[in-house]
Image (cartoon, rainbow, N blue to C red; front, side, top):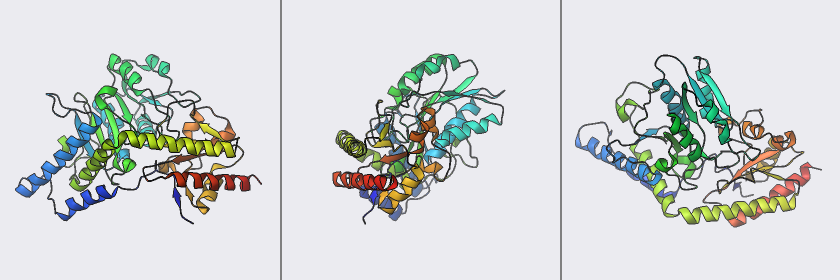
Length: 385
């Protein structure tokens, strides 16, 4: 039985053109970009071109008198840790302050913030509506003189619900507080413009948009200070020391360029496929619930509940019939805890417990969607007896 892959939020298949670009750089034997000799300078130029491409596609300005920065990291998780821990520590030399997160953040944002609690920091949370949208009105009362950072993701990794980051960033900028946004699931699915959003920092990960695994990036506004998490090198202004991977940086830039050329068609196609998928499931099982259906969502993500069924049991049953999906974030796979995102939405217990995340991608076909619906409905019927 051919496997139908509906877990693109966990990772996406790398585009052949990206593989070719990465292989070319590795095959050509690029030197260490920090070396001063000509092979090193050649590698440094390739790295700079990749950085400029990432900035251009995502709306950061590296050419201004006070340029933004694109810091390459080993993953989106590392970039989130650098943003949360690096920014707050750089802004709090004397005593701990306050950090504000939304209730639906990814673990790579929540756990660094919780680590700060051990150092005496205060952590406040922004609630969400039943559709999973952050309540903007919760923010102003929390923006006090000791607030050092606000972090709200751009698109949720489980429901796909888009967040009012631009509006929240405006409130933060008025209060002189930097806002970081984890845009890992949004970049490569919809247009993201760093400067127009008004955020201080933005996280991306290449493998979420058909780029290579092993590289992420943190975009930083020109005026944002960051304390490094790693030490032992001068690379990237000392903010992220260690020899940069020219091949992976080129791969990330290539993936973004390819996506930008196909942006509108890609979004239209994914939206239609997701709607077709959701219509098929809700028609075949009228009790199914599309979580976040009343909000604006990313085009490729569907969180669907099958009340009365156990999501983990359903996941394993679907895997046995060749449908790959997830119960939530891949980074929390194996956890017995019910989804923090869905619980924050105050959904009924049977909805939370019976929810699965299906995420489509550039390689998903209409035939696969229809066959996946058929297999899912068959399994649901069998589990319900």
